[in-house]
Image (cartoon, rainbow, N blue to C red):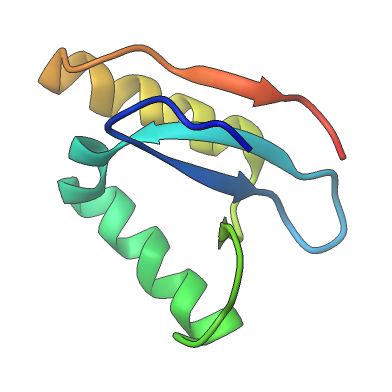
Length: 85
């Protein structure tokens, strides 16, 4: 999997729904909303989870949250890689 420099691959989706892969800029991980989602991921999957970072969140909600984060920091645009698995 090729990742854009300065970005982290993230799989987003609820357990019962489709997963979507995002290329998230590292600056986005400083945002309090993103920190909360990372804490939820740690609770659900554990800190020893191997592989791509997975966040248990509705895909549309995550996309809107990223857009809001990116508009605040003007750091980048969303790189949606794959729409469904």
